[in-house]
Image (cartoon, one colour):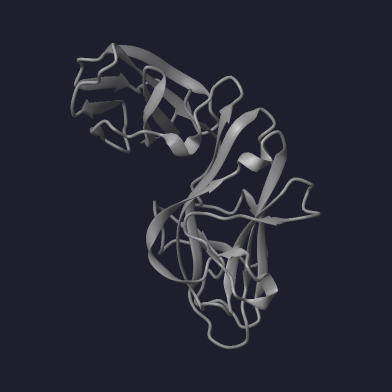
Length: 263
């Protein structure tokens, strides 16, 4: 089985979030036209304590494994200021701080020993956060910025926010995807067709290509022989929007790629 998204936000609007301070920035982004940031105009303020909460709950009740991912960069005064990402399974009564690949443990007395974003990371990186401890439940996500009265910096940006799950009928963890095949998907964005060029043969007898929308709905599934080096998919009848291409070999995911269709 392949992890599939139950939620995706390209962060071009704030329609999926509730906040009176956080907002979009159309100058700094991982993918156009915008990202979401704690301080859309200039640096964050002194003594800031601002939060942004997902408008909806993410349903992990049928998930065997789950992962949160987004692209991010930040410039935050180390130790004194910080960003936290938190999850709640009780409609926001209690919040649990989340640890990702790029968080570090804080020495700030307010959140001593908890995972935070601090310091500077000025290149876009893909953050991945394991949500397996929340499977079987519904959760909300919150981003929080806290600062002191002294040095103010540019803050925190994130883009292309996704919640992915493996349902209980399958067994591949989202973090165990194996990109062992050299491939190119072009054009992207695509209009009426997309071409997948595979760099070398696959050892299994066949490969399966699937196309999902951002809600996990399957739009296309085809099986090809392992000797194939180019696959052409007809997109003419698909609505414009964001999709995910999945390629499996022997039931193992080998490619999981975002595809934008624009007619």
